[in-house]
Figure 1: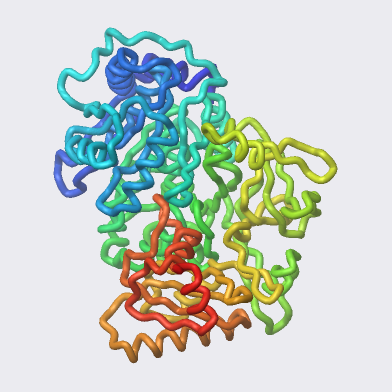
Figure 2: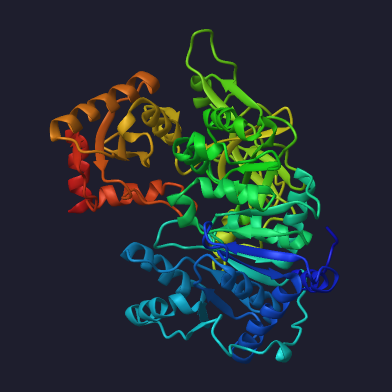
Length: 580
Protein backbone atom coordinates (compact mmCIF):
# COMPACT_ATOMS: atom_id res chain seq x y z
CA UNK A 1 0.00 0.00 0.00
CA UNK A 2 1.56 3.29 -1.11
CA UNK A 3 2.09 5.79 1.70
CA UNK A 4 0.14 9.05 1.36
CA UNK A 5 -0.06 12.04 3.73
CA UNK A 6 -3.79 11.48 4.26
CA UNK A 7 -6.66 9.17 3.40
CA UNK A 8 -7.98 11.91 1.14
CA UNK A 9 -4.81 11.92 -0.98
CA UNK A 10 -4.91 8.13 -1.32
CA UNK A 11 -8.54 7.98 -2.42
CA UNK A 12 -8.10 10.89 -4.83
CA UNK A 13 -5.23 9.00 -6.45
CA UNK A 14 -7.39 5.88 -6.80
CA UNK A 15 -10.09 8.00 -8.47
CA UNK A 16 -7.57 8.72 -11.24
CA UNK A 17 -5.55 5.51 -11.41
CA UNK A 18 -8.52 3.14 -10.92
CA UNK A 19 -11.35 5.33 -12.13
CA UNK A 20 -13.45 2.54 -13.68
CA UNK A 21 -12.78 -0.18 -11.12
CA UNK A 22 -15.72 -1.06 -8.85
CA UNK A 23 -14.94 0.36 -5.44
CA UNK A 24 -17.95 -0.68 -3.38
CA UNK A 25 -21.14 -2.68 -3.94
CA UNK A 26 -24.12 -2.95 -1.61
CA UNK A 27 -26.45 -5.92 -1.99
CA UNK A 28 -29.97 -5.17 -0.78
CA UNK A 29 -31.77 -8.13 -2.38
CA UNK A 30 -29.95 -11.38 -3.15
CA UNK A 31 -32.81 -12.75 -5.24
CA UNK A 32 -33.45 -9.78 -7.54
CA UNK A 33 -31.58 -9.17 -10.79
CA UNK A 34 -31.24 -5.50 -9.82
CA UNK A 35 -30.68 -6.23 -6.13
CA UNK A 36 -27.35 -4.42 -5.81
CA UNK A 37 -25.82 -1.04 -6.50
CA UNK A 38 -22.16 -0.25 -7.14
CA UNK A 39 -19.87 2.78 -7.33
CA UNK A 40 -16.57 2.94 -9.19
CA UNK A 41 -13.65 4.79 -7.66
CA UNK A 42 -14.37 7.79 -9.88
CA UNK A 43 -18.05 7.76 -8.89
CA UNK A 44 -17.20 7.33 -5.21
CA UNK A 45 -14.87 10.32 -5.39
CA UNK A 46 -17.55 12.44 -7.09
CA UNK A 47 -20.16 11.45 -4.50
CA UNK A 48 -17.78 12.22 -1.63
CA UNK A 49 -16.99 15.64 -3.11
CA UNK A 50 -20.71 16.33 -3.60
CA UNK A 51 -21.61 15.69 0.04
CA UNK A 52 -18.39 17.34 1.25
CA UNK A 53 -19.29 20.56 -0.54
CA UNK A 54 -22.54 20.72 1.45
CA UNK A 55 -20.64 20.14 4.69
CA UNK A 56 -18.00 22.78 3.87
CA UNK A 57 -20.73 25.41 3.46
CA UNK A 58 -22.09 24.68 6.95
CA UNK A 59 -19.20 23.41 9.05
CA UNK A 60 -15.77 24.64 10.06
CA UNK A 61 -12.72 22.35 9.85
CA UNK A 62 -12.73 19.98 12.82
CA UNK A 63 -16.49 20.19 13.43
CA UNK A 64 -18.13 16.86 14.26
CA UNK A 65 -20.77 15.32 11.98
CA UNK A 66 -23.08 12.57 13.27
CA UNK A 67 -23.70 9.81 10.72
CA UNK A 68 -27.06 8.10 11.24
CA UNK A 69 -27.23 5.99 8.10
CA UNK A 70 -28.42 2.39 7.91
CA UNK A 71 -26.25 -0.09 6.02
CA UNK A 72 -25.76 1.08 2.44
CA UNK A 73 -23.80 3.25 0.05
CA UNK A 74 -25.06 6.58 1.51
CA UNK A 75 -23.09 5.85 4.68
CA UNK A 76 -19.94 5.14 2.67
CA UNK A 77 -20.18 8.37 0.69
CA UNK A 78 -21.10 10.44 3.77
CA UNK A 79 -18.19 9.06 5.78
CA UNK A 80 -15.73 9.78 2.99
CA UNK A 81 -17.33 13.20 2.55
CA UNK A 82 -16.32 14.04 6.12
CA UNK A 83 -12.72 13.20 5.23
CA UNK A 84 -13.00 15.29 2.05
CA UNK A 85 -14.52 18.24 3.96
CA UNK A 86 -11.97 18.29 6.79
CA UNK A 87 -14.61 17.58 9.46
CA UNK A 88 -14.67 14.71 11.96
CA UNK A 89 -17.04 11.81 11.30
CA UNK A 90 -19.02 10.37 14.22
CA UNK A 91 -20.56 7.07 13.00
CA UNK A 92 -23.55 5.92 15.01
CA UNK A 93 -26.37 3.39 14.82
CA UNK A 94 -29.86 4.72 14.34
CA UNK A 95 -31.51 5.63 17.67
CA UNK A 96 -33.79 2.60 17.41
CA UNK A 97 -37.06 1.84 19.17
CA UNK A 98 -35.77 1.15 22.68
CA UNK A 99 -35.02 3.87 25.20
CA UNK A 100 -31.57 2.55 26.09
CA UNK A 101 -30.58 2.65 22.39
CA UNK A 102 -31.88 6.21 22.05
CA UNK A 103 -30.07 7.28 25.20
CA UNK A 104 -26.78 5.97 23.86
CA UNK A 105 -27.05 7.85 20.57
CA UNK A 106 -28.11 11.00 22.42
CA UNK A 107 -25.09 10.74 24.72
CA UNK A 108 -22.80 10.26 21.72
CA UNK A 109 -24.21 13.35 20.01
CA UNK A 110 -23.79 15.44 23.16
CA UNK A 111 -20.36 14.10 24.04
CA UNK A 112 -19.03 14.79 20.55
CA UNK A 113 -20.69 18.21 20.34
CA UNK A 114 -21.85 17.49 16.81
CA UNK A 115 -22.77 20.37 14.50
CA UNK A 116 -24.98 18.50 12.07
CA UNK A 117 -26.39 15.02 11.51
CA UNK A 118 -26.60 13.22 8.18
CA UNK A 119 -28.82 10.27 7.30
CA UNK A 120 -30.50 8.92 4.16
CA UNK A 121 -33.94 9.73 2.75
CA UNK A 122 -35.48 6.54 4.12
CA UNK A 123 -34.48 7.32 7.72
CA UNK A 124 -34.85 11.12 7.71
CA UNK A 125 -38.24 11.17 9.45
CA UNK A 126 -37.02 8.82 12.20
CA UNK A 127 -33.90 10.92 12.77
CA UNK A 128 -35.96 14.12 12.91
CA UNK A 129 -38.34 12.55 15.44
CA UNK A 130 -35.44 11.43 17.65
CA UNK A 131 -33.94 14.92 17.60
CA UNK A 132 -37.29 16.44 18.47
CA UNK A 133 -37.87 13.99 21.33
CA UNK A 134 -34.44 14.58 22.87
CA UNK A 135 -34.50 18.36 22.59
CA UNK A 136 -31.21 18.47 20.70
CA UNK A 137 -30.76 21.61 18.64
CA UNK A 138 -29.26 19.74 15.74
CA UNK A 139 -29.93 20.14 12.01
CA UNK A 140 -30.33 16.85 10.15
CA UNK A 141 -30.35 16.22 6.40
CA UNK A 142 -30.51 13.31 3.97
CA UNK A 143 -27.15 13.16 2.19
CA UNK A 144 -28.59 11.14 -0.71
CA UNK A 145 -31.40 13.59 -1.42
CA UNK A 146 -31.79 15.33 -4.79
CA UNK A 147 -29.77 18.52 -5.22
CA UNK A 148 -27.71 17.85 -2.09
CA UNK A 149 -24.32 19.48 -2.65
CA UNK A 150 -22.28 20.11 -5.79
CA UNK A 151 -19.02 18.25 -6.41
CA UNK A 152 -17.71 21.17 -8.47
CA UNK A 153 -17.81 23.45 -5.41
CA UNK A 154 -15.66 21.15 -3.27
CA UNK A 155 -12.27 22.43 -2.12
CA UNK A 156 -9.34 20.43 -0.77
CA UNK A 157 -9.08 20.99 3.02
CA UNK A 158 -5.35 20.17 3.04
CA UNK A 159 -5.61 17.19 5.38
CA UNK A 160 -2.49 15.93 7.16
CA UNK A 161 -1.48 12.71 8.87
CA UNK A 162 -2.08 14.21 12.33
CA UNK A 163 -5.64 15.41 11.70
CA UNK A 164 -8.39 13.60 13.59
CA UNK A 165 -10.77 12.14 11.05
CA UNK A 166 -13.05 9.95 13.15
CA UNK A 167 -14.52 9.56 16.62
CA UNK A 168 -15.12 5.84 17.06
CA UNK A 169 -17.37 5.43 20.08
CA UNK A 170 -16.59 2.34 22.11
CA UNK A 171 -19.15 -0.26 23.10
CA UNK A 172 -19.53 0.70 26.73
CA UNK A 173 -22.40 1.56 29.03
CA UNK A 174 -25.09 3.86 27.70
CA UNK A 175 -24.23 6.57 30.20
CA UNK A 176 -20.51 6.84 29.51
CA UNK A 177 -19.67 6.73 25.80
CA UNK A 178 -16.04 7.46 24.94
CA UNK A 179 -15.04 8.64 21.48
CA UNK A 180 -11.68 7.29 20.32
CA UNK A 181 -9.84 9.98 18.30
CA UNK A 182 -8.55 8.30 15.13
CA UNK A 183 -6.25 10.23 12.80
CA UNK A 184 -5.46 9.90 9.10
CA UNK A 185 -2.11 8.45 10.12
CA UNK A 186 -3.74 5.88 12.39
CA UNK A 187 -6.02 4.67 9.59
CA UNK A 188 -3.27 4.44 6.99
CA UNK A 189 -0.79 2.69 9.28
CA UNK A 190 -3.31 0.21 10.64
CA UNK A 191 -4.64 -0.76 7.21
CA UNK A 192 -1.09 -1.20 5.97
CA UNK A 193 -0.24 -3.33 9.01
CA UNK A 194 -3.30 -5.52 8.43
CA UNK A 195 -2.48 -5.90 4.75
CA UNK A 196 1.13 -6.88 5.33
CA UNK A 197 0.33 -9.20 8.22
CA UNK A 198 -2.23 -11.23 6.32
CA UNK A 199 -0.67 -10.84 2.89
CA UNK A 200 -3.31 -8.84 1.03
CA UNK A 201 -2.82 -7.53 -2.49
CA UNK A 202 -4.80 -5.09 -4.60
CA UNK A 203 -6.64 -8.13 -5.96
CA UNK A 204 -7.92 -9.15 -2.51
CA UNK A 205 -11.60 -8.30 -2.41
CA UNK A 206 -13.22 -7.39 0.92
CA UNK A 207 -16.75 -7.56 2.23
CA UNK A 208 -19.31 -8.73 4.75
CA UNK A 209 -22.19 -7.67 6.96
CA UNK A 210 -20.57 -6.04 10.02
CA UNK A 211 -22.22 -2.64 10.75
CA UNK A 212 -20.21 0.21 9.27
CA UNK A 213 -20.54 2.27 12.45
CA UNK A 214 -18.61 -0.50 14.23
CA UNK A 215 -14.80 -0.45 14.19
CA UNK A 216 -14.51 -3.94 12.67
CA UNK A 217 -16.91 -3.09 9.86
CA UNK A 218 -15.50 0.35 9.11
CA UNK A 219 -11.78 0.28 9.91
CA UNK A 220 -11.26 -3.46 9.68
CA UNK A 221 -13.13 -4.25 6.48
CA UNK A 222 -14.39 -1.31 4.37
CA UNK A 223 -11.44 1.08 4.59
CA UNK A 224 -8.58 -1.41 4.10
CA UNK A 225 -10.26 -2.57 0.88
CA UNK A 226 -10.65 0.98 -0.39
CA UNK A 227 -7.12 1.94 0.62
CA UNK A 228 -5.73 -0.99 -1.37
CA UNK A 229 -7.80 0.02 -4.37
CA UNK A 230 -9.62 -3.32 -4.40
CA UNK A 231 -13.38 -3.97 -4.37
CA UNK A 232 -15.66 -4.15 -1.32
CA UNK A 233 -19.06 -5.91 -1.27
CA UNK A 234 -21.46 -5.19 1.61
CA UNK A 235 -24.79 -6.40 2.95
CA UNK A 236 -26.90 -5.41 5.94
CA UNK A 237 -26.47 -6.99 9.39
CA UNK A 238 -30.20 -7.74 9.51
CA UNK A 239 -30.00 -9.65 6.22
CA UNK A 240 -27.27 -11.82 7.74
CA UNK A 241 -29.20 -12.48 10.96
CA UNK A 242 -32.31 -13.48 8.99
CA UNK A 243 -30.47 -15.64 6.45
CA UNK A 244 -26.89 -16.41 7.51
CA UNK A 245 -26.15 -18.26 4.28
CA UNK A 246 -26.41 -14.95 2.41
CA UNK A 247 -23.12 -13.89 4.03
CA UNK A 248 -21.42 -16.95 2.59
CA UNK A 249 -23.19 -16.44 -0.75
CA UNK A 250 -21.87 -12.86 -0.81
CA UNK A 251 -18.33 -14.19 -0.31
CA UNK A 252 -18.78 -16.65 -3.16
CA UNK A 253 -20.58 -14.32 -5.59
CA UNK A 254 -18.18 -11.38 -5.20
CA UNK A 255 -14.98 -13.42 -4.94
CA UNK A 256 -14.26 -12.03 -1.47
CA UNK A 257 -10.87 -12.92 -0.07
CA UNK A 258 -11.24 -11.21 3.34
CA UNK A 259 -14.40 -11.15 5.44
CA UNK A 260 -14.51 -10.73 9.20
CA UNK A 261 -17.08 -11.49 11.90
CA UNK A 262 -17.32 -12.21 15.62
CA UNK A 263 -17.34 -15.82 16.81
CA UNK A 264 -21.15 -15.88 17.16
CA UNK A 265 -21.54 -15.38 13.39
CA UNK A 266 -19.62 -18.57 12.65
CA UNK A 267 -21.74 -20.40 15.24
CA UNK A 268 -24.90 -19.03 13.61
CA UNK A 269 -23.76 -20.39 10.24
CA UNK A 270 -23.11 -23.79 11.82
CA UNK A 271 -26.63 -23.91 13.21
CA UNK A 272 -28.68 -22.37 10.43
CA UNK A 273 -26.96 -22.97 7.08
CA UNK A 274 -28.38 -26.17 5.61
CA UNK A 275 -26.57 -28.92 3.74
CA UNK A 276 -28.53 -27.95 0.62
CA UNK A 277 -27.29 -24.37 0.92
CA UNK A 278 -23.69 -25.52 1.48
CA UNK A 279 -23.93 -27.52 -1.76
CA UNK A 280 -24.47 -24.26 -3.70
CA UNK A 281 -21.36 -22.53 -2.26
CA UNK A 282 -17.72 -22.33 -3.28
CA UNK A 283 -15.75 -20.98 -0.32
CA UNK A 284 -12.34 -22.07 -1.59
CA UNK A 285 -11.40 -18.50 -2.57
CA UNK A 286 -12.20 -17.05 0.88
CA UNK A 287 -8.56 -16.73 1.94
CA UNK A 288 -9.04 -14.93 5.26
CA UNK A 289 -12.02 -15.83 7.45
CA UNK A 290 -11.23 -13.41 10.25
CA UNK A 291 -12.69 -14.15 13.67
CA UNK A 292 -12.46 -11.46 16.34
CA UNK A 293 -14.23 -8.85 18.49
CA UNK A 294 -15.27 -11.39 21.15
CA UNK A 295 -13.82 -14.55 22.73
CA UNK A 296 -12.91 -17.06 20.00
CA UNK A 297 -14.02 -20.61 20.71
CA UNK A 298 -11.72 -23.39 19.50
CA UNK A 299 -14.73 -25.68 19.07
CA UNK A 300 -16.32 -23.18 16.68
CA UNK A 301 -13.19 -23.06 14.52
CA UNK A 302 -12.97 -26.85 14.29
CA UNK A 303 -16.65 -27.33 13.53
CA UNK A 304 -16.75 -24.58 10.92
CA UNK A 305 -13.74 -25.97 9.03
CA UNK A 306 -15.23 -29.47 9.13
CA UNK A 307 -18.80 -28.51 8.18
CA UNK A 308 -17.90 -26.15 5.35
CA UNK A 309 -15.15 -28.33 3.98
CA UNK A 310 -17.84 -29.59 1.61
CA UNK A 311 -17.84 -26.07 0.09
CA UNK A 312 -14.07 -26.05 -0.37
CA UNK A 313 -13.27 -24.32 2.92
CA UNK A 314 -9.98 -25.26 4.60
CA UNK A 315 -8.76 -24.84 8.18
CA UNK A 316 -5.86 -22.63 7.08
CA UNK A 317 -8.39 -20.04 5.85
CA UNK A 318 -9.44 -19.38 9.46
CA UNK A 319 -7.76 -16.20 10.70
CA UNK A 320 -8.26 -15.49 14.41
CA UNK A 321 -7.47 -11.82 15.04
CA UNK A 322 -7.25 -9.45 17.97
CA UNK A 323 -8.12 -5.77 17.84
CA UNK A 324 -9.88 -2.81 19.40
CA UNK A 325 -10.92 0.72 18.46
CA UNK A 326 -8.24 2.32 20.64
CA UNK A 327 -5.62 0.67 18.39
CA UNK A 328 -7.49 1.57 15.17
CA UNK A 329 -8.92 -1.96 15.26
CA UNK A 330 -6.15 -4.38 14.09
CA UNK A 331 -3.55 -5.54 16.61
CA UNK A 332 -2.61 -9.08 15.64
CA UNK A 333 -3.45 -11.89 13.25
CA UNK A 334 -1.92 -14.59 11.10
CA UNK A 335 -2.91 -16.57 8.04
CA UNK A 336 -1.75 -19.40 5.71
CA UNK A 337 -1.90 -22.08 8.42
CA UNK A 338 -4.56 -23.54 10.70
CA UNK A 339 -5.05 -21.64 13.97
CA UNK A 340 -2.93 -22.60 16.94
CA UNK A 341 -5.04 -23.99 19.76
CA UNK A 342 -3.35 -24.46 23.11
CA UNK A 343 -4.83 -26.76 25.76
CA UNK A 344 -4.05 -25.42 29.24
CA UNK A 345 -4.77 -26.19 32.87
CA UNK A 346 -7.65 -23.86 33.89
CA UNK A 347 -6.67 -24.01 37.56
CA UNK A 348 -3.17 -22.80 36.73
CA UNK A 349 -4.66 -20.11 34.49
CA UNK A 350 -6.60 -18.81 37.48
CA UNK A 351 -3.17 -18.08 38.99
CA UNK A 352 -2.09 -16.33 35.76
CA UNK A 353 0.22 -19.17 34.71
CA UNK A 354 -0.06 -21.15 31.48
CA UNK A 355 0.60 -24.87 32.00
CA UNK A 356 -0.30 -28.05 30.18
CA UNK A 357 -3.37 -29.77 31.65
CA UNK A 358 -2.97 -32.61 34.10
CA UNK A 359 -3.72 -36.11 32.74
CA UNK A 360 -7.46 -36.63 33.09
CA UNK A 361 -7.87 -33.13 34.54
CA UNK A 362 -9.92 -30.17 33.37
CA UNK A 363 -8.91 -28.43 30.15
CA UNK A 364 -9.38 -24.99 28.73
CA UNK A 365 -8.46 -24.25 25.13
CA UNK A 366 -6.87 -20.95 24.15
CA UNK A 367 -6.87 -19.76 20.54
CA UNK A 368 -3.79 -18.00 19.20
CA UNK A 369 -4.40 -14.63 17.54
CA UNK A 370 -1.09 -14.43 15.67
CA UNK A 371 1.89 -12.18 16.14
CA UNK A 372 1.79 -8.40 16.59
CA UNK A 373 3.51 -6.95 13.53
CA UNK A 374 3.81 -3.20 14.14
CA UNK A 375 3.13 -2.52 17.80
CA UNK A 376 5.34 -2.75 20.86
CA UNK A 377 3.52 -5.08 23.28
CA UNK A 378 3.98 -5.72 26.99
CA UNK A 379 2.12 -8.15 29.24
CA UNK A 380 1.82 -6.30 32.54
CA UNK A 381 0.57 -6.98 36.04
CA UNK A 382 -2.38 -4.58 36.12
CA UNK A 383 -2.00 -3.83 39.84
CA UNK A 384 1.75 -3.31 40.17
CA UNK A 385 2.62 -2.25 36.63
CA UNK A 386 5.38 -4.86 36.51
CA UNK A 387 6.17 -6.26 33.05
CA UNK A 388 5.69 -10.04 33.00
CA UNK A 389 7.58 -12.81 31.25
CA UNK A 390 6.21 -14.93 28.41
CA UNK A 391 3.91 -17.67 29.67
CA UNK A 392 2.34 -15.46 32.38
CA UNK A 393 -1.03 -13.81 31.85
CA UNK A 394 -1.53 -10.12 32.50
CA UNK A 395 -3.00 -7.00 30.96
CA UNK A 396 -1.99 -6.31 27.35
CA UNK A 397 -0.31 -2.91 26.89
CA UNK A 398 0.49 -1.42 23.47
CA UNK A 399 2.32 1.46 21.82
CA UNK A 400 2.92 2.36 18.19
CA UNK A 401 1.57 4.36 15.23
CA UNK A 402 -1.79 2.57 15.21
CA UNK A 403 -2.58 3.61 18.77
CA UNK A 404 -5.17 6.39 18.63
CA UNK A 405 -4.73 9.89 20.00
CA UNK A 406 -6.94 9.33 23.05
CA UNK A 407 -10.58 9.93 24.04
CA UNK A 408 -12.45 13.01 22.87
CA UNK A 409 -12.65 15.63 25.64
CA UNK A 410 -11.55 13.07 28.27
CA UNK A 411 -8.07 14.20 29.34
CA UNK A 412 -8.14 12.33 32.67
CA UNK A 413 -9.22 9.01 31.14
CA UNK A 414 -6.84 9.55 28.22
CA UNK A 415 -3.96 10.01 30.64
CA UNK A 416 -4.92 6.87 32.54
CA UNK A 417 -5.47 4.62 29.50
CA UNK A 418 -3.17 5.98 26.79
CA UNK A 419 -0.20 7.21 28.85
CA UNK A 420 0.46 4.29 31.18
CA UNK A 421 3.98 3.41 32.31
CA UNK A 422 5.37 0.20 33.70
CA UNK A 423 6.80 -0.01 37.20
CA UNK A 424 10.28 0.69 35.82
CA UNK A 425 9.09 3.81 33.96
CA UNK A 426 8.87 2.39 30.45
CA UNK A 427 6.18 3.99 28.31
CA UNK A 428 3.87 5.51 27.46
CA UNK A 429 1.63 2.55 26.63
CA UNK A 430 -2.06 2.18 25.95
CA UNK A 431 -3.82 -0.13 28.40
CA UNK A 432 -6.18 -2.43 26.53
CA UNK A 433 -8.12 -3.76 29.51
CA UNK A 434 -7.66 -7.22 27.99
CA UNK A 435 -5.89 -10.12 29.65
CA UNK A 436 -3.54 -12.18 27.56
CA UNK A 437 -0.29 -14.10 27.29
CA UNK A 438 2.57 -14.48 24.81
CA UNK A 439 3.45 -18.05 23.86
CA UNK A 440 6.05 -18.80 21.17
CA UNK A 441 5.73 -15.32 19.73
CA UNK A 442 1.95 -15.47 19.44
CA UNK A 443 -0.61 -13.60 21.51
CA UNK A 444 -3.49 -15.41 23.23
CA UNK A 445 -6.31 -13.31 24.68
CA UNK A 446 -7.78 -14.83 27.83
CA UNK A 447 -10.39 -12.28 28.94
CA UNK A 448 -11.22 -8.75 30.06
CA UNK A 449 -9.88 -7.27 33.29
CA UNK A 450 -13.24 -5.64 34.04
CA UNK A 451 -15.15 -8.88 33.43
CA UNK A 452 -12.89 -11.13 35.51
CA UNK A 453 -14.81 -12.85 38.33
CA UNK A 454 -12.95 -13.14 41.64
CA UNK A 455 -14.70 -15.73 43.79
CA UNK A 456 -13.14 -17.05 47.02
CA UNK A 457 -9.74 -15.86 45.81
CA UNK A 458 -10.11 -17.60 42.44
CA UNK A 459 -10.02 -15.86 39.04
CA UNK A 460 -12.77 -17.07 36.70
CA UNK A 461 -13.60 -15.91 33.18
CA UNK A 462 -17.33 -15.27 32.64
CA UNK A 463 -17.28 -16.31 28.98
CA UNK A 464 -16.03 -19.76 30.05
CA UNK A 465 -19.06 -20.18 32.32
CA UNK A 466 -21.43 -18.87 29.66
CA UNK A 467 -19.97 -21.12 26.97
CA UNK A 468 -20.17 -24.23 29.15
CA UNK A 469 -23.81 -23.54 30.03
CA UNK A 470 -24.75 -23.24 26.35
CA UNK A 471 -22.95 -26.49 25.56
CA UNK A 472 -24.64 -28.35 28.39
CA UNK A 473 -28.23 -27.09 28.15
CA UNK A 474 -30.09 -27.15 24.84
CA UNK A 475 -32.62 -24.38 25.71
CA UNK A 476 -29.67 -21.97 26.10
CA UNK A 477 -27.66 -23.14 23.10
CA UNK A 478 -28.34 -20.40 20.58
CA UNK A 479 -28.90 -17.50 22.96
CA UNK A 480 -27.05 -14.84 24.95
CA UNK A 481 -26.23 -14.90 28.62
CA UNK A 482 -23.86 -13.37 31.10
CA UNK A 483 -22.23 -14.27 34.41
CA UNK A 484 -21.16 -11.68 36.98
CA UNK A 485 -20.68 -11.35 40.72
CA UNK A 486 -22.56 -9.37 43.34
CA UNK A 487 -21.59 -8.73 46.99
CA UNK A 488 -23.90 -10.87 49.14
CA UNK A 489 -21.96 -9.96 51.33
CA UNK A 490 -19.00 -11.79 49.78
CA UNK A 491 -18.80 -12.01 45.99
CA UNK A 492 -21.32 -14.51 44.65
CA UNK A 493 -21.94 -15.63 41.06
CA UNK A 494 -25.18 -14.71 39.29
CA UNK A 495 -26.12 -15.96 35.82
CA UNK A 496 -28.60 -14.14 33.58
CA UNK A 497 -29.43 -16.07 30.43
CA UNK A 498 -31.98 -16.08 27.66
CA UNK A 499 -34.02 -19.23 27.12
CA UNK A 500 -36.08 -20.24 24.10
CA UNK A 501 -39.17 -22.44 24.15
CA UNK A 502 -42.42 -22.93 26.01
CA UNK A 503 -41.74 -24.02 29.57
CA UNK A 504 -43.75 -24.35 32.73
CA UNK A 505 -42.40 -22.78 35.89
CA UNK A 506 -41.46 -26.25 37.11
CA UNK A 507 -39.50 -26.95 33.92
CA UNK A 508 -37.68 -23.62 34.29
CA UNK A 509 -36.91 -24.49 37.90
CA UNK A 510 -35.39 -27.80 36.77
CA UNK A 511 -33.34 -25.98 34.13
CA UNK A 512 -32.02 -23.59 36.78
CA UNK A 513 -31.07 -26.54 39.00
CA UNK A 514 -29.22 -28.09 36.08
CA UNK A 515 -27.41 -24.83 35.34
CA UNK A 516 -26.23 -24.54 38.93
CA UNK A 517 -25.03 -28.13 38.82
CA UNK A 518 -23.07 -27.46 35.61
CA UNK A 519 -21.30 -24.41 37.06
CA UNK A 520 -20.43 -26.28 40.24
CA UNK A 521 -19.22 -29.39 38.39
CA UNK A 522 -17.12 -27.53 35.81
CA UNK A 523 -15.84 -24.60 37.87
CA UNK A 524 -16.19 -25.61 41.51
CA UNK A 525 -18.23 -22.57 42.57
CA UNK A 526 -21.81 -22.12 43.68
CA UNK A 527 -24.30 -20.05 41.74
CA UNK A 528 -26.25 -17.76 44.04
CA UNK A 529 -28.65 -16.47 41.42
CA UNK A 530 -30.20 -17.73 38.19
CA UNK A 531 -32.31 -15.37 36.05
CA UNK A 532 -33.92 -16.71 32.88
CA UNK A 533 -35.03 -14.17 30.26
CA UNK A 534 -36.87 -14.02 26.96
CA UNK A 535 -34.75 -14.13 23.77
CA UNK A 536 -33.36 -10.74 22.76
CA UNK A 537 -33.43 -9.19 26.24
CA UNK A 538 -29.76 -9.61 27.15
CA UNK A 539 -28.14 -6.42 25.94
CA UNK A 540 -25.31 -6.54 23.44
CA UNK A 541 -22.94 -4.14 21.77
CA UNK A 542 -23.25 -3.29 18.08
CA UNK A 543 -20.90 -6.18 17.26
CA UNK A 544 -22.87 -8.74 19.24
CA UNK A 545 -20.81 -8.80 22.45
CA UNK A 546 -22.80 -9.16 25.67
CA UNK A 547 -22.68 -6.03 27.82
CA UNK A 548 -21.90 -7.72 31.11
CA UNK A 549 -21.50 -4.56 33.18
CA UNK A 550 -24.75 -3.18 31.77
CA UNK A 551 -26.63 -6.39 32.61
CA UNK A 552 -25.16 -6.45 36.11
CA UNK A 553 -26.35 -2.87 36.62
CA UNK A 554 -29.85 -3.72 35.41
CA UNK A 555 -29.94 -6.73 37.73
CA UNK A 556 -28.89 -4.68 40.77
CA UNK A 557 -31.38 -1.95 39.87
CA UNK A 558 -34.22 -4.47 39.65
CA UNK A 559 -34.84 -3.51 36.02
CA UNK A 560 -34.94 -7.03 34.55
CA UNK A 561 -38.20 -8.76 33.66
CA UNK A 562 -37.45 -12.48 34.05
CA UNK A 563 -39.41 -15.51 32.99
CA UNK A 564 -38.03 -17.23 36.06
CA UNK A 565 -35.58 -16.36 38.81
CA UNK A 566 -34.21 -17.80 41.97
CA UNK A 567 -31.72 -16.20 44.29
CA UNK A 568 -30.00 -17.02 47.54
CA UNK A 569 -31.12 -14.91 50.53
CA UNK A 570 -27.87 -12.94 50.52
CA UNK A 571 -28.35 -11.94 46.90
CA UNK A 572 -31.95 -10.91 47.55
CA UNK A 573 -30.73 -8.77 50.43
CA UNK A 574 -28.04 -7.19 48.24
CA UNK A 575 -30.64 -6.55 45.55
CA UNK A 576 -33.03 -4.97 48.02
CA UNK A 577 -30.23 -2.76 49.36
CA UNK A 578 -29.22 -1.63 45.91
CA UNK A 579 -32.78 -0.64 44.96
CA UNK A 580 -33.66 0.99 48.28
